[in-house]
Length: 129
Image (cartoon, rainbow, N blue to C red; front, top):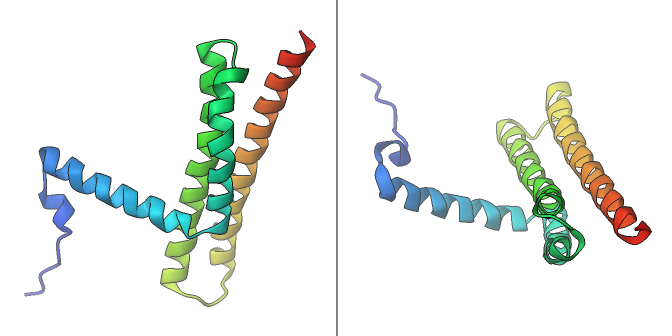
């Protein structure tokens, strides 16, 4: 009889599961830090997040400014996960692998465009009033 190995995380519950999940999340951030693009976006975030509190006139504007900055990092981590999974399957070139990586990259681009658009609108509003 062939028994499948069970992920130990699936057997945990309650606060123990949350504790281990936090550790996995921190490991994911550490892995993301190994990517140049994520490091660059994180450095921008270190400056832009505090700036969002100065630029935003209401809590909603501040949340939108900060949220778009965080969204770029989130999408970058997801793109890295896609690329890692594709590379794990096969390092060889394949049309579907290219499509997966390209669409992940396009998602990052769109999140950056959204972030820039929101920040430009906020800056224009701040300095034109």
